[in-house]
Amino acid sequence: MPDAFGARFAVFVDTEEEFDWGAPFSPDASATSHMAAMPAAHARFAEHGVPLTWLVDHPIVACPRSVGILRSLLEDGRSAVGTQLHPWVNPPFDETISTHNSFAGNLPRALQKAKLRTLTEAINAAFGTPPLIYRAGRYGIGLDTPAMLAALGYRIDSSMRPGYDYSSEGGPDFTEIPNRPFFLGAERALIELPLTTVFTGRLRAKGAGLHRALGRIPRGRGIAARTGLLSRVALTPEDMPLAEALEAIRIAIGDGLRLLNFSFHSPSLVPGHTPYVRDAGDLAAFHRWWDAVFTLLGQLGVAPASLAEIVEAACGPALTSASAGAAGGL
Image 1: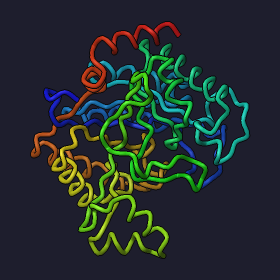
Image 2: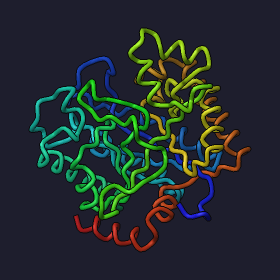
Image 3: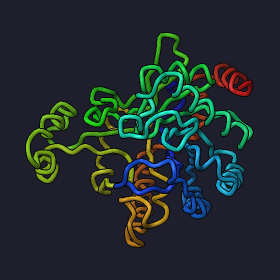
Image 4: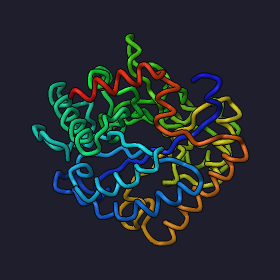
């Protein structure tokens, strides 16, 4: 990122259908009633000067009411819409619904491409602008995904979660992925913007390697976190204690990270749809988490960034314009 970009942060919303997180994946779980809470949430973020980027999946873009809500919120001139692919609710439905196939990168190349094109075209038609950022649902990016995204005009992928390993479920292993943005592919047509994960504690320098080893010891990770030795902290209010998140932000900025990538799931805006916000008390804590985080970021001089500002800083205006033209010809 150019020096003029400074230290910034962005908030991306995994904007998706409501489903039972403990049940098998189902193409029939496609309700979007929680989207009625999005205007109030948008207003709370806007009070802090923070734009949102909604990474919408197929049930959202197929719901005229949800599209109408988001279109009205995009009138703030800074928020944006991107793409999130949940294969099990995204046509064409030519695969067996399973945990393995819930990671889009595991699908046959032609099927992954067809699903991605279907969703990209639907978003372009619904919002009148081509999506420039993509996130694979369940962080399920595959080896073929970057080339597909670049061909469709995407400039940024944000599917990688540093320090996390989903290989036990058939997904990718991001243990060694850094927090800093980097180019994907020799053509340098696509930039990876990882979700920010910070290791805190007295042994944080040992990071992902030690965290992986602790996972092989019964209750090892929990003991290490409670004793202040090592904690893995993702920048999200979902299951991440506020005190640990604030410490992670201080460490990330102190280490020179220039762009912090925050996220949450849209159904968490209404109690009962995710394990993270089960009741009114959880929702109040969710909002307090953001208030405290924005206060600290302001004190540290870390300003919010819109998607357009990130794309221009990372890719340059020429690439941004070229990608918009390419996607417009879908």
